[in-house]
Length: 109
Length: 114
View 1 (spheres, rainbow over the protein chains, first blue to last red):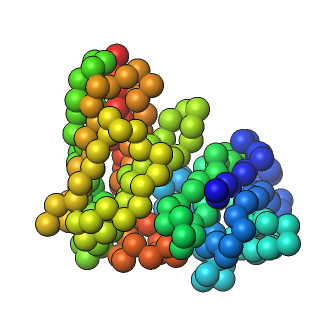
View 2 (cartoon, each protein chain N blue to C red):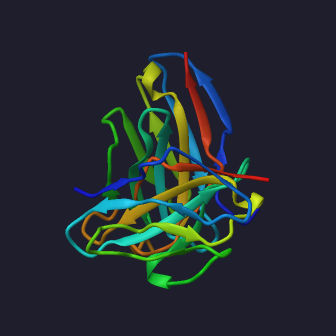
View 3 (tube, rainbow over the protein chains, first blue to last red):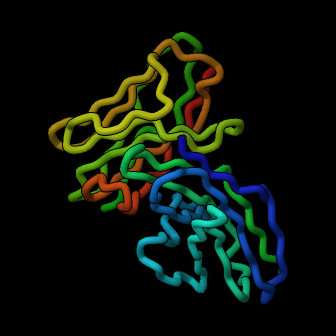
């Protein structure tokens, strides 16, 4: 079974500080990993995915298969980054997106 | 709105009743997914349809069923409702239903069972 763990329910950082949102997964094959974000009063939307290896809005995430992690990082947090962040995993065999419980990020001025 | 649409926005009903939630995918998307988001369970995958056919099933109760119509809109039917079914129900769509596809989410339907 595939599982995604986001250990921090709430995370607060000051503007300009680095931020790291943790995500660990359990799956023995080759999963596809995603970060989805939900800003206040907006829809859940894709932030970035492992397969694209992009940097979106200054965020990056590296897949570490040894540690089974896909942490989301940004070197300098902005107030507009305040949102709920969900890590998610999908696999060809399971054919379903499994979400973590989410981390509410608050960037303080 | 060319994005995913869901109706109704809010639904209040009583235990034992049956409701139907509707979802229209983005134009061109063939795959539709349903999710349930509750406070204690988080965001849980229920079921996926691709071009009218069921493709994947998650934690969907037997009291719940879904279908995707020829015009690609989908309906989620919830019957014999219980208090614990109160949740936010999201629909998402993707182009092809490939596991690495980006899923585009609708605004959700908030169901309250009294």
